Length: 155
Image (cartoon, rainbow, N blue to C red; front, side, top):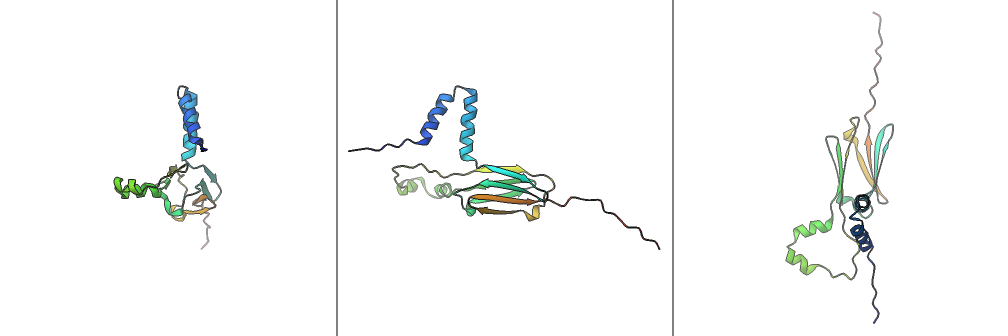
């Protein structure tokens, strides 16, 4: 009988992390790798009329992403369906209904990112859309206040 063994990619990372744990620089690199796997990549652009945030969110549905604005702090976070189901079910019940996996490499993910926005935002017209796994949040800027010229009329 032949057996097939799979080398888990996380096993190599865990092994390297254990080896690197005695080196300060290596700890920083290992932590950055771990955070990069959890936190989605973000690009932020400043344009004349708006700020734009693009975030990689492949595999997340729009129902599981929450975007809130509190004062000037924009929060983008995900809710995972698996974690919600675990809260709802009794642990014994969940144990009985849990499927048996031969290989399980995919995990449910969640994240929370916060951004402090500048003062010149128009908070009423912020919009968001997801296209091809990229979340784009458009944050319009308030028009720049220009001095108003007042004409003088003769009477």
